[in-house]
Image (cartoon, rainbow, N blue to C red; front, side, top):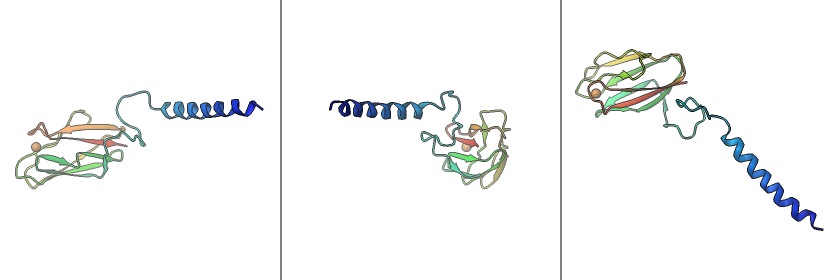
Length: 129
Ligand SMILES: [Cu+2]
């Protein structure tokens, strides 16, 4: 008569414990966010076109395929540039008002951050998948 009462709590404990540890198992190596299904990501937009507008990169965070060419278009009335923090991507020339420039992204997966050489507060990132 007592055995069903003992078994039920055990089943509940096993179900909770198993689910929790499985969910946190992968992705413990840290480093840059290269996960394809990371829910805590930056909300990167899948596009190869970025506007320089109102002293900001829009969208600020994008994701592209390996080796893609990303084009920045200056919609402002002042000069901008695109300087990647990783030297794997050569810096852009000065992008004059109304002009555009494309840069070839690396083939290695990772998130590459950049800023404007004229306006250090202008920052963005490209996630290469
Ligand atoms: Cu700028």
